[in-house]
Length: 179
Image (cartoon, rainbow, N blue to C red):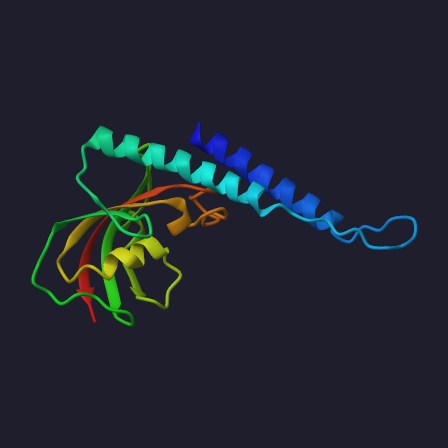
């Protein structure tokens, strides 16, 4: 159902963009340009509705699994369920992670058991912003569960592999090393 809604939203968005850009430089008989004013409120309303629906799905997931999470100012849901006294990760640090990424329906997308551990530089990688935001609150040996809304993950593009448009991602991560 979510994939169908995502495809409908994406199709509507692409259609709207095509219409807007194809009409922007139209002319009338006397060769005067027609200025088409795009109402930002239409796009804003569509975005707000998509975020509202995604929040409902996230809250359903949290209720189903009874997770006790915090929500950051950006909308990242997180639970650091194993803590240590290690220094907090900072921008520029290289991190090595064990991880599992699933969709809200429970389907596994990626896992370090299959794909290998993930290593990258905080603040200089192509990793999703929600993951990096969570890591900046963690240290070596710590474990966390994250729910990363699509706008903090791969958004309207997906990852061009296993993650389609507007997918919420659920991470279970462990910081193996930081250097």
